[in-house]
Length: 277
Image (cartoon, rainbow, N blue to C red; front, side, top):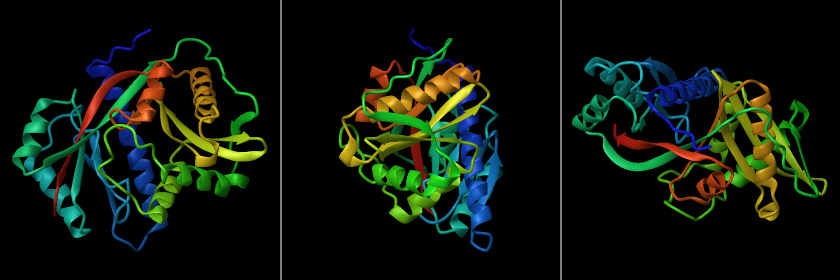
């Protein structure tokens, strides 16, 4: 079934994203108690700065809880400037149109897009496990191996589609993944022929299962690892009462193509707008 996304569903997904970024940002603050950083609410959204060059440095979720005032933006922009960081706003195209006008008037420049895809979860979801692959929840005792394979996979993205506007230093990416892993996500590993070949995670909130990243080590790609990780997370999300699963991809990427092959529909696009300090 094709999943239609109206404003209500988009708002629910964006609120889940706000919680994820806020939780990840708070984890970074606990880890770096004496370093610059913040997690600030803004009109139903969140502004987060974790550390220099972190993927958690952003403003997310605007457009579903009112329009921020000029003073709200002043506070956020000053906070990012104090950390020497640009402000990156990720704005859903179903958000209140007044926010797009507001940020462009303040000098934000459109630099990229990202796609949010979703799939309805109705009833039990089938687990697909190709021969030679085992998928299971990942415990604390193997957190290091899970982190290594996820970071290794993220460090070698697919080359199809629109290139990402961002590149993250490997050590910063590893810390951001670690912070998000403490933000209420469930981790999974895929083992192929006795070797940890891939890792993934999911966060469930308000009936939304956020597929918060999946990666396969380059040596194990094209063997069904991603399919197995996806089906396990969808089955567990459905069993836990989620009615929709969502994934974020680069436009036209192999990840988007694979998601659509697995029954995901393009729900909406986020515009990435940036203002330099």
